[in-house]
Image: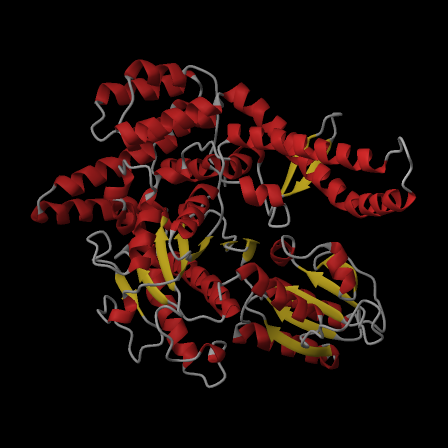
Length: 620
């Protein structure tokens, strides 16, 4: 059965809302045994719940009131309180305070990941000292520390992960802490799915660090008799186990920066889709809030289409809707000899079809408004031109000088121009120094901070030096680069080939396809393989079951992912015969503009940038 992360996480949350008792499928809202309760959550867990559970679902499961943990709350007697929070010192202090103030009769504590022993001791001593330990009914580790946005899409919601991992001032301890957080998040995903995958990753950089630590954590956990994966069985073949492919953002930098003209990435990049919600200007001037997820058939069916095709599809759906409404009106209208039996039947059919017609009209109106908002931005910023020219650049390996200047001096926001300039730098293998200076000058004219451009230029010059250097001098370059970049050197150099990738298929998708197929392939020959179920996992092991083929893959991008990669992997899964299944996850989902802000911050930290930097200080 295909892995459905959204369904699995929703099931875990509903069980938690049922005070961690198995759900009784026969129990309805009117069941006498329904326990009414109060739900308390922190901001992070609110984001976990938001894409999965609506207010009406909370009520259906007996939640009558819900509050953020930091909000001042009044005592509510005779009702259990269900807490869903991260295990942090701040949250523990707040729980102890709530218990000592006798806010609720009983506390059911659910932590989004495993609570560390010192915090558990703080909870115990705090409630003992305030004589409120009897109020703590249960403490559960839920392993739900990730946000599922679609059936096959999740984020760990770790902000500025790329910036932190590549920060030249980051120490070993900082990097280890970030890696441990990522490992904890991935462990939660695997525990929710109840699968122990084979793990593959390129050598070096954050990808190998995360893969080896996750492998170790899974191995340690599997030694326990009652572990979270017991039901998975020990001797599954590779076709029954998924492959977890871990990559680092520097593996393919361009995808995080480029403009895309497909509906799903465009809505995210331009209108700021967050947690499946989005606000756009309505027809009459007010803001309208919309939800875009698996319950919206138009979004599911057309998210991968280019924007013009989406506009045509909206028109087609509208015409079909009008035709169906006319048909209902015609059948229920009078005229000629009246056939009462026939008319009654048509009226019944019409009444039954009204909810479906109303829902269709709502979906059409929603996407008409979204498309109208997108069209306004596209015209104002020439986004169609940016997307086309960037795509052409990647295929041709460059752009005409006059065309380049025309774009940088034409329409578009400062962020659009900066992203375009960086794409030009990435796609052109040997760009003359005079052209680079001209680009920098054009950016400064538009008052654009060039720090991000300078940072990518530095990475690229390092990659070129590394790829052209002899083995002897290469080690000298690496020594120099490690002094310059601190921790990020192995990550920076990992993308030498992919930084200048020139074909239409993303390097990520191509690599995942090769890893799933399990056939000999030079692109993935050097990839490490870990099997947490093996007695002693050895990286690069040659056991045949580690090489596939695999029907299911979980692809994880460290340092920020996007809807372009997600769409490309969905396309890969559906293109395969038989159809395969791919889940895509990332540390955070970023727009091109948000990712470039992290590049700019890195540029500032390395003392790169332009005079415009004074006008646009880096975000902290």
